[in-house]
Amino acid sequence: MVGKLASTEVANRLNEWYDTIKRHEIEEATRLKSEVQQAIEEMEEDQNVLLYYNLIDSRYKQLIEQFDESKNILESVKEQTEHTETDQLLKYYYYFFCGLYEFYKRNYIKSIHSYRQAEKFLDDIPDEIEHAEFHFQLANAYYGIMQNYFSLSHAEKALEIYKKHDSYVNRQISVNMVLSFNKFALNQHNNAINLCKEAIEIASKNDIPFLKVIGYFNLGVYNEYLDNLQTARNSLETTLDIDYPKDIKKDTYLAIKYMLARVLFRMDLIEEGREWLNESKKLAEEINEQTYQTKISIIQSIYLEPNESSLDDELEKLKKKKLWHDVSDLSAIAGRHFKKKEMYELATKYLVEALKAKEYTSSLQEEAERI
Image 1: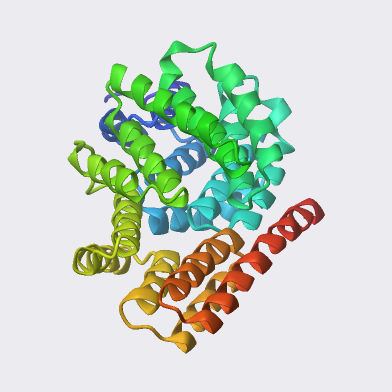
Image 2: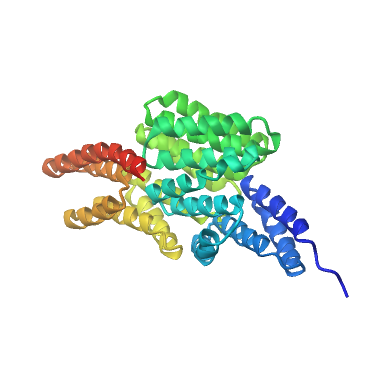
C-alpha cells in the first residue's frame, strides 16, 4: 500500500504555489495548481492544510479574475476560519483575501476593513514578502478612495522590501505604478508619467507583457485627463497589440475597451467610439461587471442617447457605491461635453456635480478610520 504524503510536504508545495501567485506568474501558478491538487488527494488528513489549500485557491481564482468563485470559497471557509482554533497565518490569509476580493469588486471601504482585520495577525508572520504584499494592497485600497498620502506611505514601505528581492521585479513595477497613480492625482503629472514610462521599460526588459499593458493603459488614462487625446488613443491602442492573456484578464481588457471608447467620443469619432463602447458593454455583461455596466451607460447617455434622467440615475448608482472619483470624473466629462454643445444649463449642473463629488472623497477616509 502506497503511503500518504506528509502534510508538511504538501504545505511546502502550497507555499511554492502561493509564491507564484504573488508574483503574478499565471502560467506557472496554473501548472502548480494541478500538482497541488494531486498532492492534496494523496495527503494524510490535516484540516489546517486543507484550509490553507482552499484559501490559496481563492487567491488563485482572484489572479485569473474568477471573482465569484473566489467569493464562494471564502464564504465556505468563513466559519471554520473565524470560529475554530486555526493558526494566525490562516486567519491572516482569510481576512487579507477577503480584502482583495472586496477591492476587486470596488468596495474600497470594505476592503480596508478586511485589511485592518488581517493586520492584527501580520506581526506573527515572519515572511517580509507577505508584509510587502500587505502594504502594496493597502496602498491600492487607499488609492481607491483617493487618500493619496496614505497610499504613498504604504506603497513606499512595500517597495523598500521588494527591492531586496530580484525575483519580485514584477511587484516592484506594480508598486511603481501605484506611486505613479498617486503622484498624478497630486498634480505631479510629469513625475507620474515618467514613473509609468520607467515601469513599461522595466516590464519590456524583463518580458512581462501584462505589466506593459497596464503601463500603456495608465499612460492612456493620464493623457485623456490632460486632453492629449491622440496620445491617449495611441497608448490605448498599443495595449491591444501586446500579447497577453485577454481571455483570463477580462477585467483589464474591459477597462481598455471602455477607455478607448471614451477617448474616441471626446475626439468626435462617434462611430468608432460606438463600436468600442458596444464591445465593452458585451464584455461587462459577460463577466457581470456592474460598475463598468453603469459607467458604460453613463457614456451612452452623454454621447449616443442624450438623456438627463438616465444619466442622473446611473450616476446615483455610483454614488450609492461611494465611487466618488468615478462620479467626479464622469460628471466632468458630461459637463465639458454639454458646454461644447452650448447646452450651458446642463453643463453647469454636471460641472458642479463633479466638484461636489471631489469634496466627498475626504469623507471616505473618515469612514475608513471609524472602522
